Length: 212
Image (cartoon, rainbow, N blue to C red; front, side):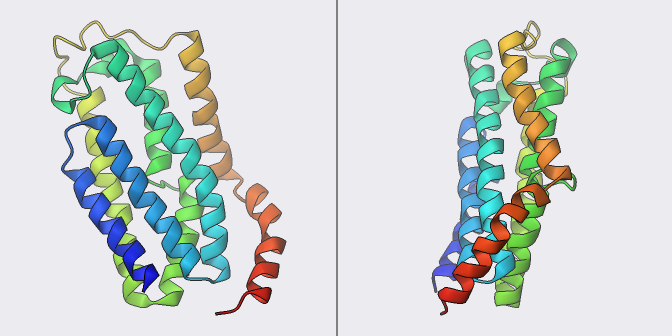
């Protein structure tokens, strides 16, 4: 029952995220959807689901911090969170656009980014628990790509608006913060076993002791 509620939460939050015009609310609802997937994978209570939940808690934490930092940076520079007031930022802030893209790709679980191993394991765990729940949970990948890439396109591409035509690129402090987060997105995408190897023995022990 609870795993079904988690899957419903994934779909509900994802649909609301697609409809958002406020980028901060979009990121917040996307976070709810990702947490719902983590809950569903853990509630499936098999090795792939639990390990996926553990690694995804770490990786989602990295990605959502990066996304909220980007939102804060946009709001401070533009005085708005509305996607309708943004556009064309890549022309004046290429470093910002590049780092933002890496974080977005991690959030939508593109292969070789940190979001991919966790989401793959989570979906595999839910799929092994129940085929139809796995199919419904898998829609989070489609919805996630829709709302995150749409938001990125509206912020970065197109013609500059009066608010964005003089948008300043990231300074040294901002570049350092976003650079570290983007670096973790890539490194943990290439080397997920560095985390999975640390948790495997503990997961095996927990599953052997706690049986439902």
